[in-house]
Amino acid sequence: MSAIPGPDDITRVVFANGLTVLVRENHTAPVAVLHGSLAAGSVHETPAQAGLASFVAGLLSRGSARYDFAAFNETVEAIGGNLTFGADTHSTDFGITCVSEDFALLVGVLADALRRPTFPADHVEKLRRQRLVYLQERDQDTGSVASLRFYEMLFGRQHPYGRATSGYSETMSALQRTDAVAFHAQRYTPDGAVIVVVGDVDTPAVIDLLQRQLGDWQGAAADRAVPPLPVGRAAERIFVGMADKVQADIVIGAPAIARQDPDFYAVRVANCILGQFGLMGRLGAKVREEQGLAYYAYSSVVAEEAGGTWTAGAGVSPDKVDQAIESIRHEFALLGAKGVPADEMADSQAYLTGVIPLTLETNDGVANTLLSMEWYGLGLDYLQRYRDLIYAVTVEDVQRVAAAYLQPEQCTVVVAGPDLG
Image (cartoon, rainbow, N blue to C red):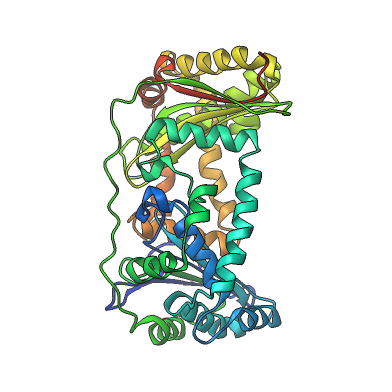
């Protein structure tokens, strides 16, 4: 079997109800891994319901038709397995890890949780209390606050890209059990869902198992629409004062690209150069190491289905905020104004391609990669094409996308930390 998954060793089947299944066998260890996603995320909430998709996902393990809370935990723990649920902007995600002989059992538990959750009233309140504690802690963290406010400034809370997927204290407090029941009934559907199974399994047996457990599941057509992104929002700089803090956190950036944008790979290479490669790229080398302005400095790209962001983040001493912001802006401008040296370009491209085999060393890494490939329609041969996609990016491409998306005067800046007066 090839070390790089591809069309020759991935089986892809689409059930009549719209559920897509990918299976790749790997018999080096008696372990089976399942990763899955369905189109039910925070994009499907109203602003007043912020956090609902995540809340519903958290309740799936609290009780279903065949497994109450105790039975769910006893079944999973008795075999030393792992069964998880979570939700993000566009999807509800789930996963199984276990020894192969127990895989069918956990698939049965998973199917029951996805299809027939009971949302016990006492667990609705228990989970709500836990989430409220988490939200209180999040809202006291300077890095989290800076990030949250940045997305609110860019997209606004009326748009799902501008809201926290985990919600807010006021929205979490207002959620009712009926909201969870309705969200599940309306949004949990096999149509458009993807399940990937990797490991010590027999492909026909896995397909038969999933067909028996999920093949007769019916639901509405998947909704992957996203509200139009706000346009023409003016760049702003805001400060969020937080008492009793000793560090300030900075987020600076701008709207960028969707995952399917033709510039995706150019932006990926440019971002690696700016704030990822080695000790966090140029930002780590200049802002942190050489100038000593930050405890950490890096850049990141988020490419969602309808749009995205390109940001830099830094944690600094409060008296170094202005210097750090100007230094980051300088690196933004430099990347867009001057071509990248050949050796720096080659190092970043080698890093981006060299990390793929490491990602694929585990069944979990393979399953996660295949899920992303299918979710975004990249094709079963994507990993074979990936190296060429990265090396097709030119120095001119890097300069062009940096100049287009990281114009310093057009970037939004959010600082959260102590107010020095």
